[in-house]
Image (cartoon, rainbow, N blue to C red; front, side, top):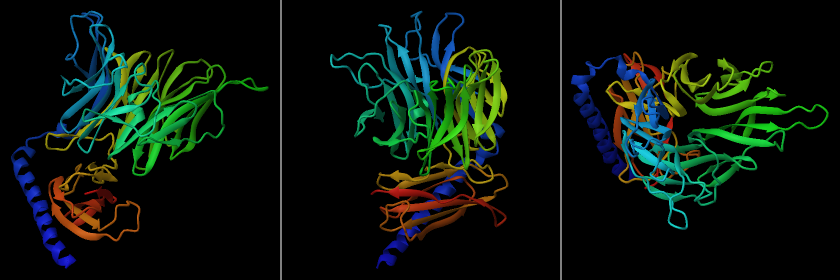
Length: 487
């Protein structure tokens, strides 16, 4: 009886699958040939602030491919003392989400959120007297259509909390906040990761603490700078320092990262010009990229650098304020945001691009066109090999709690691919991604477009993959991507 019931459901899902593709193709047929190569270019979004030379004001802004977009809503442009800052940016389709802070009439910093340049009020915590003290929004992520915002209110609440679609969410265990940036938050599916260092380096997954290994023990200072999650692997970048002890009387500083808690030393400096630090981490396939800075051991000049799999790449060298803040990769292109001799810039494959009148720089995100006039994120894409379909959504190991189980799969185009085959399987009764599940075929179909909507077969784990085909020959295929439907 089980197979007799499932068979019509499969045919119904397959019909819906093919119909959604046909409709999508027809709706875009008339416009697809009119779109230029600009639809497929990678756009670079950098959050920070812009200096108005006419008024002397510093305003929250983001830069798209080097051009400023000033966020004027939510602040009083007539206040000469106005100073606002964008601290984090996330591009979701054609929506641009930015968070940071503005300055209110009492000259207090207030957490701020803009969506498509429109100011959106935030409901943040008040102190015990009902007042809103200095606050900021330091991070924003969008996952499965949910908007996660991370406020920072040191005078009101000493612990992390976050807003999910505007609703306050407290973690089950206290997670101490600190002097943080947007890169110490990461949302994967419904899992929230936070990285921080107090007496030790650590990260928290949904409020559960995971300590990070320290091979030399008892540093005088340890700090984390960024966290990145792909599949079941958690990467955290950071740095630590040891004051001079013993006969050598030498200070030591180390730039490093942790993979699943295990320490990997990138560079060690010592003595007067021994600064070594990291600012951001990004993982593409098997490659680990970490941005940071160091000093010339002889002259003390600042050096903006990044490491790829432990190999140092020099970007710029200057007498002061030369460093990096963020790194992201798509395909073979490496983007790094930072400053060179106090000028705010970003580099693409080592080539410097200036950010005009940029006063401050905090975070960066990449977005790439899908060929249909839409933008899709590439900063968190699971697979960055341009010859393999890059999955846009859903992310690997996504947990779905909605019902009905309507799910959209989308991916980036592959050169020379004439059609794509989508293969979906399910494991009845299993909710463990890594369990010994027996997968059954569910849907398989070939289409010319790059997005499909289907309904999951039941409350269990599904997996899917995309094959790129040219003239009936498979030219590439993704790995399996997993989805767990709770209902």
